[in-house]
Length: 255
Image (spheres, rainbow, N blue to C red):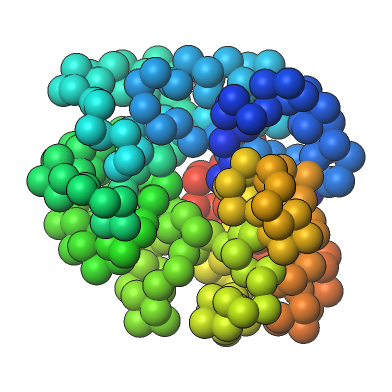
């Protein structure tokens, strides 16, 4: 089966047809969808979605683009949720230096505190990284966690190798399907297959065949076709390897 390692199925964009989206994804062979939380306000929605749709697995975290409206008590709520619901990961967390007016100190504070929680609960992390590869790596070396996924990876080969050394898999999705994304496609073609996981990031980052439309987990197998073509491998081998990689890094064996 296919595993979508990063999909915001709880997002409002799916409110009108969420059940149909899940059914179409299942019909395409998607057997698991990991749904990351982004802030305290959507933890319940993520958990409810996973309760309604058994193929879904929750992750909980405070996204760097939401720390401007977070408060210290949100970290307490996150801790309680980790203890009670046992998600598969802490995420989506990280750093985003692309957004105008970002507060470096605030982002670093919440990132560090959530890395401490990941270490305490022995959970992997789902990383959001924009223009912050080196700072993320610096924090991961400071707060050693049990690996995770560098979501929507778009760094250099050297940075990729360092994430891998620290126990991380690298997430590839719709951006890989665009022919002009030559550096990203080069990484997808050349990185060790055991380090790659697939994702949609739906409803965002649509693949080329859904350009400017809502992305969806049902597109994962077609996204995988790009990876198979780049690596000159059978699609079945891509499915086997990438799904095994997700299970391994998120400690999902037997789930």
